[in-house]
View: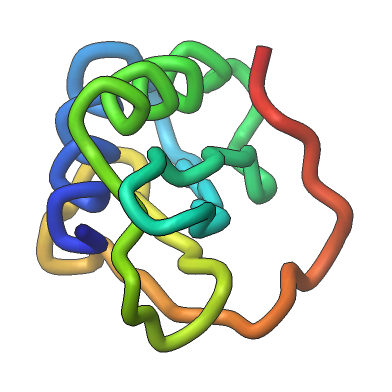
Length: 103
């Protein structure tokens, strides 16, 4: 599921990401098995709200939280401009700061 979510983050960034240098940073909170993950903005560069909304919509339509997971959250970071070799994700036991769902 995490690889698919990362692919969606890159795709949405290509479609909606702001021009120039920056970062798309999102967190996915795994929910009940079979339910879509909850997508949160985790400190993306301003002007990239449409990317988070796009990822949320695609995750809701396509992805399901797995039964087995290494942690309750995964954070994905996509650099701007996009460099797919430097797209990173990390599993986390808790979110590092307070995050709000994208609109």
